[in-house]
Length: 441
Image (cartoon, rainbow, N blue to C red; front, side, top):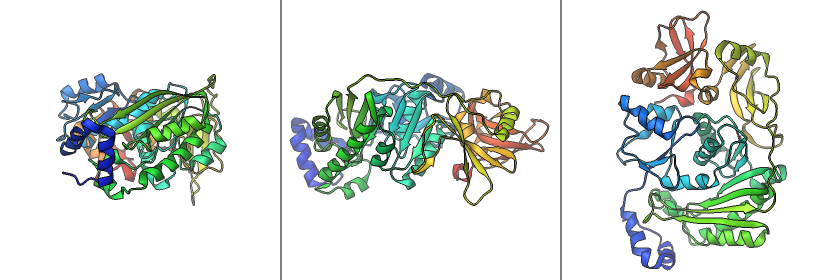
C-alpha cells in the first residue's frame, strides 16, 4: 500500500464520506494507461484497422476512454512507445483523465487558442488535432527547459499552426489583451491525483501546498481572463482533489470577475473512472465573439521556392507569414511559417511557428518538422519502408534503394504511408537526415 500523507487522507475522508474506502482501495489497483490518436494524422478507425497486416499489436485490446473519442486505455503489458507508428506521430501516450480538459474545450478550426501551461505538450497536441491546421495555437510554458519537450512533441505530431513561448502569464497578457477565442489553463497544483503513479508527487506534498498553489492559480486565471475575447471560452483544470484548488479557485475567480458563466464542473475519480484524477471547469466570457479572417501569405525566399519546385507536389500553406531567423554564430538562417502575423518581439520564443528548414550557402535544407507536417502525397519523391527498414532508419542508418532519380533529391521516408523524416538519395543510398535528438538508441 502506498504511504499517503496523513493530512491528505483526513481531507479525502471528509470530502468523500461513504466513498472514502472505495477511493482508498483504488490505490491498490494498477495505474491506468492511455494513448490518444492524433487527429492530424489519422482517424481512430483507420489506425486500428491497419494493424491487421502488421506484427505491431499496439492497437489491439484497446478500451475507449468515455470523455475523449480518440482516447483509449491500453493493457499494462503493452509498450506502445516502441511502435514505429508512435515515431510517426500517429498517437500520443497520455494518462486517460488528462485527455478530458482539451476534449471539453475542443476549439474549432480557425480559432485563436492559448495553452497557457503547456509542457510537455499532450494537451497542446490534442487541441491542435481539433483545429486541423487552421487558426493559431500559442503553446506556452514558463520553463525554457520544459519547453524543449513541448517543441519536440508538437513537431512529432505534425502540428503546423503552433507558436511556442516561454513567458510568464502577465507578460503574455500585456501583449495579447482580448486576443484568444479559447484558453486552456492546466494549472500548477499540489498533484494529489498523481500520488498513485508518481511517488515524487507524494514526497513534494506539504501541508500548506494547496493554499500556496491556489494563490498561484488565481494569479494565472487573472491574466488568462485578460487575454480571452468576449464570448470566448476557458477551461481550468488540475490533477488534484483538493477543494481549495478546485471549486475554491473557481468560486473565487467567478466572484471576482463579472460576466463569466460556469458551464460545467467535472471531477474524475480513480475509484469510479478510467483515470488517476482530474478536476475540470468550463467557463464562457460574456460578450459577442468575433472571427478573424485568414491572412494572405507573403512571398517565401527563393531558396525555399526552389526546394518546393523540386521536392513537393503541392504548396501546403494557407494564411500566415514566412519568417527568417538568424542561427547564432552562423551564416545560416532558419525559415519559419507563422500561422498568424503575430508580433513576437520582446517575448521569449522557443519556436516561431512551423520550422520549415534552414537556408545555408544558397540552398534550402528541410527540417524534421516539415517532414512530419506534410503527407506522403505532398512529396514529389517518397519511399515507404518495410517494418525492419523503418526501424533501421529510426536508428539513424542509411539504406540501400533501387530508386533511381537524377541529382541528389530529397526523399520523404514513410512507414505505412506516414512520414518518418527525410533522406537524400545519393548513389543508390538513402542518406539518413534524422536529427540527432530523434534517433532511437
